[in-house]
Image (cartoon, rainbow, N blue to C red; front, side, top):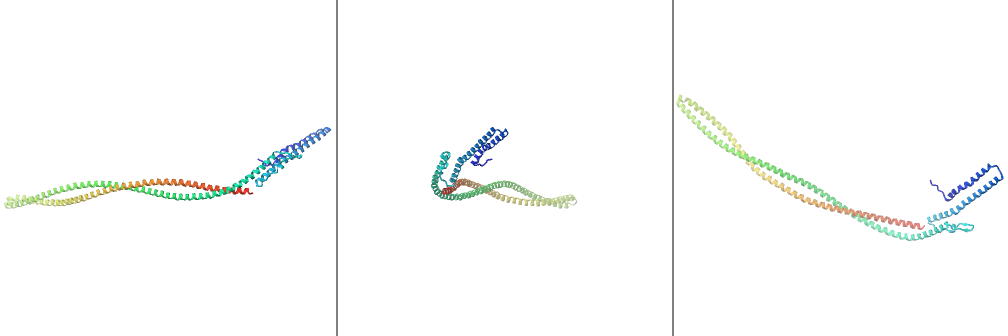
Length: 404
C-alpha cells in the first residue's frame, strides 16, 4: 500500500521519533528520580534534565522549521513555475527568491542552479515555440497539398479499380461462357460416342442378321432344289400311273374278251369266266386306286409347284433384302466414319476451348493480381490521405497550443 504524503509531512515523520524521545525520556528520568529520596543533588539533576531536553526540543523544532523553509519552499516555487509552463504561461523565475540568506548573507545552492536551468529551459522552449509556429504553418500548407494530391490519387486509383473490376467481370463472363461451351462439347462428345457405339452395334446386328438371312436363303435354295427334284419324281410317278391306267384298261379289255369267249364255250368256259370276272374286278380296283393316287399326286404336284414359286419369290425378295442390308451396312459404316470425323473436329474444338480457357484463366489471374495491387495502391492512397489529414489536424492543434 502506498501513502500519499507531501514533503512537509515526510519531514514531520522524520523528526517525530526525536520529538517523542525528547518528551518521554525526560518524563521517564524524572519519574525515576522521584523514587530517590529528595536531596539537593537530585533537585539539581532534575533541573539539568529539564533544561537539556527543553533546549533539545527547541533545536528539533527549529531544524524542522528551517528544513521546511529551505527545502519545501523552493520546491513549491519550482512546481508553480512548471505548472505555468504546462499552461502555456511560462515566464522566467526570479533567481533571488532561490538564494537563502542567513544574517544578511546569501548562499547560492542547488536550488539557485536549478532556477537558472529552468530559466534556460523556458528560453529554449520559447525559441522552439517560435520555430514550431513557423514550421507548423509550412506543415499545414504541405499537408493541404498532400491531401489534394492524395485525393486525386485516390480518385484515379478508384477509377482504375472500377475499370479493372469491369474488365474482370467481362473475363469472368467469358470464362463462364467457355466453361459452358466446354461442358456442352463434352456432352456432345459423349452423345456422339453413344451414337458411334449404337451405329457400330447396328452395323454388327445388320451383319449378323444378313448372315443369318443368307443362311436361311441357302436353306431355301436347298429346299427349292429338293422340291424341284421331288417334282421330277412326281412327274415320273404320274407317268407310271398313266402306264398303270393303260395296263388296267388293257387288262379290263382282255378280261371282257375272256368273259365273252367263256360264255361262248358254255359250261366248259364257266371257270374261266369266273377268273376273267375277278381279273376285271381287280383291274377296276387298280384303276380306281391309280386314279386316287394320281389325284393325290396332282394335289402334291400343285402344292410343290406353289412351294417352288413361293421359294423363287422368297429368293428374289431375299436378294433384294440382302442388297438393301448391304446398303444399310454401308450407310452405318458411313455414319460411323462421319461421327468419328465429327468427334475429331469437336475434340479439336474442345482442345482449343481448353487452351482459350487456360488463357482466360491466366488473364483473370493477372487481372486479379493487378486488382490486388491497385487495392493496395488505393489503401496506400487512403492511408496517405488519412496521414495528411492527421498532419493537418496535428498542425492545427500545435498552432492552437502555441497561440495559448
